[in-house]
Length: 168
Length: 429
Ligand code: SF4
Image (cartoon, rainbow over all chains, first blue to last red; front, side, top):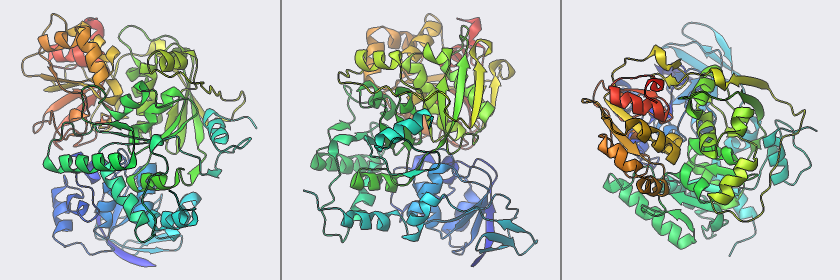
């Protein structure tokens, strides 16, 4: 179980251009991407980069969160701040990137929450402690669970590589 | 079991008699494409091998394509250094489908792949770019993935944990009238489906208007399928596919022309009567915010962008040049042209198309992504409005969060450049 405070909310169809604008795409390393998270939302970006947002804080998203470009920076920049994403639904590539890089996220189709609310994320549900309400969590696509269980795609594939006969 | 096109393709690729929707497969990858973000893929690839005692060598260099297009020539030392790192890796690994910053073989990845015959019907294609859906136009199952996922493909040669997607069948009937193009068809479709209406689904295109459509137009439909959230768009291959691959892309080996089974199960069928369509425009800041051009005409535009992996092909440039020839881009409006590849650039040059565009006042840039993703070659000023033949109009997409981007066909773009405001191109055709 995890408990966190909602620090930011967004509506439907928030694209990776909003999460991580294209002009910063030459920056690729997960150690460097966090400073450009939500760069065009100056206040939120400032809060993130000045250390005012505690790890485990929650960003609440609408439908189709992370649509658009496949840029993995959009997932790694949020992970760098230790954010947990609770969204009504995620775009396919973003969801996979999030699992692959180990960004915490929860699919919660009915979520209702405002900035400042405290959410409790437990097995199968999200509880809005501040204003009441319990919202069901939708399980991840089952094909992806194994990667999550391995702690991300890099360790998952590393194991598969070691199982292969040595090449060349 | 009666199967959709992608079901059949995946069954074939995996050597199974049939696959059901929802089955989890690990299909072999026939082509793995990256652009400048290969720099991150390399990083993750080396990370996978760290501490394994194995050499980080790719599974098959001939199945990897790397194209520099997003920032060419490099706009910053950072990009130049990323490109240098990728160039060195490509050399070490013996990757030959590498398209550097060059006027002979360069271009945007989603044009370079088709025109070089790298994509064939029946292939499984993955790319670290969401518009990898483009390649479904040639009968491939082509979808976008992230960089770490690509690193896994480089290591293993297969796509991990692919769930066989459900398919939405799109029937496009009738012949589009003058001034109406594949871009108008797909914008109308995205409005119908909404930005997430095809999420985790495949769009399979059929109908008279598709059968008579050139590969260039089919690439537009599949390119923008992802804007309805689709995993992939696909046109089952036919005589036109064969014509393009043989006549244009230099393919000589046998082609595998699969077809969906009669009675295949489609989750939904969307029917479009192309003969009744008007030119369409997607309004800020969502690709599904689509209106007939008449409803937005009169909107002043400061920047018109003609090009991209969506509408930067020879036919697009020709349509625009026909409209612009002997006319003038309006004062107060700048028009930027970036063809989809250098091959197209040279063809357009030879035909006098580029000269006509420049003589009308357009700035013809080098092929590449240019202003499409807001990195260089044409950012918007504060509060400015752009009209573009590209595929995304998200807030901030063209480099300025206070700017607005409208999306349209090449004809709407050219006609509007002359007027300095959005107009219906049917008045000047
Ligand atoms: S032209 Fe635009 S949409 Fe196409 S690959 Fe380049 S950045 Fe992406």
